[in-house]
Image 1 (cartoon, rainbow, N blue to C red):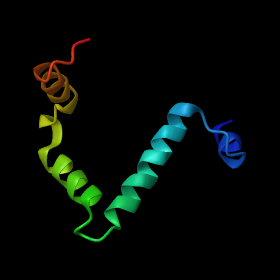
Image 2 (cartoon, rainbow, N blue to C red):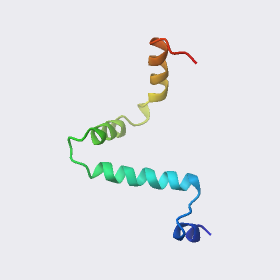
Image 3 (cartoon, rainbow, N blue to C red):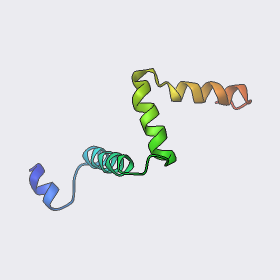
Image 4 (cartoon, helix red, strand yellow):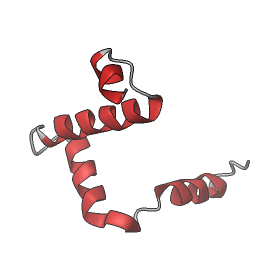
Length: 68
């Protein structure tokens, strides 16, 4: 069933999101070393599970006066 969906270019949304993420990652890794997107992705990869960007963003916005 999945191979038929793939051939018809009608993947489930979750799979399509994963596929697009992989395509984006490959494109970014092929970029020149100075490109901002590549630098950020490599830093995030280096930091690994220590990335808490959602929580950090929320704290920063709260400090600036933005509340839910």
